[in-house]
Image: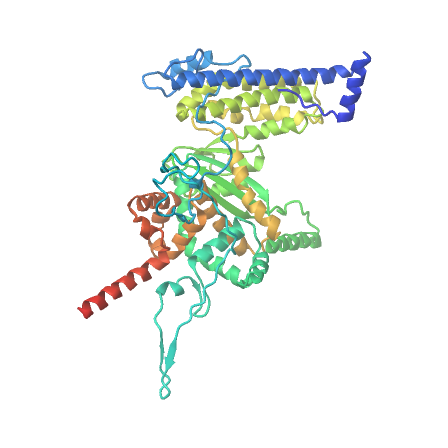
Length: 587
């Protein structure tokens, strides 16, 4: 790993001037060393890319290139022989070459197929052009060529309003009113007989507010200028009532996740709930009034993210309140079956994350990314120790990428890390023990914390080498926590505990849908539209079940019928039916 060296342009120009006058100083050697190291690294990267290209070319021709890494899951090959070939494929710096012909860089543009919900409009040539003589040369004939595709992006408001006018007649004697018939879907959704919010509008509002982080007041201001009034009080009413309809689905996802999960990653981030903050202030004031210590008053309000993985699905859950991650784990594990295998749990090294009552149901592991970050925080003062930790963890994570690219089973992945990553981790531990035993580091030194963290958490940090399927880090749950963080950045806080719980459930449904490759607006629209059936059988509306149902529908769907919005299909069918009746009567 090349250490970063910050040099200004003025300093480089002065160095160039000293070189011309042959007046180099001893401090210039540092800059020369960094420049040479950079050139060496670039040359090695070029050489490695060329070797990978030759290996890919040889693989495409059906031949094995010298030193090529074979797939550990290759048919007819044992895991031992596969690992021995992996050992032979190690490069000079101890890392394993990762050859994947599928990971080729593209042009970076989205193809037309990426616009899955786009409206397709076809423009035909004038009759007679196909087969005609070429106007340019006058010799050749015009034949079919690949079509030109232009993607046009159109701006529009988030919510679109329709005003339905019903013609009415009224009896002058008794006051009886007869109203013109209209499509039934006009009244589908949440609202009154005057204004109705379609299920798709409710789903869009949920996603924009709880995933996009757009506050209600901001959406109100935007749509007021767009000519579609949407009061913030009405917006809260919509998301609150939608939460009541989606509650069975959230419970089903939560129960499925904790019962079927094999790994669990969990972490906390700060949150704000006004009623809880006032409650904390009242408790502190009461303690001070009674002359008691305020040390035992819990002042933290956390948004806890839980990332659950089953063999095929991913479940993401959020919980906001006066708790920590360990208490959420206890809350979830009450629903896990006693005969289930132990759940692999990965967290950072905070003691509160290990403070729970169900240790017998868990395999505890610690995030290796957090261990590396502790060294990175002190890299300016201790560059040598940071360089060792950086080199070790770069190779360890590269090894894990190799296991993912080869789609190794959890058992083969564990054996692979035992062979390639365990020696690297032992090198890091050896450095830490040497520093501590030689008394070169004092307890108050900034280096003390990362060194002791590796030693104290050693069995948990290396759990991925001892048990199959243990993740290296908690990066995935850290990434999901951006959802509540983004919400608080826009809205600043929740007002009540109920508001926080509603937000947690909506965020959980959206994040779980996205993690399972399901578009959340369409998914929530479908769930809300069929909320009565959802209440009876919520397992039928789990994101992965919904995704498979969409695939089957797409396979058997009529392309013309599929292009018509679902709410208009019924009215279209009814119109055709009435027309056929009139034709029958006429005959």
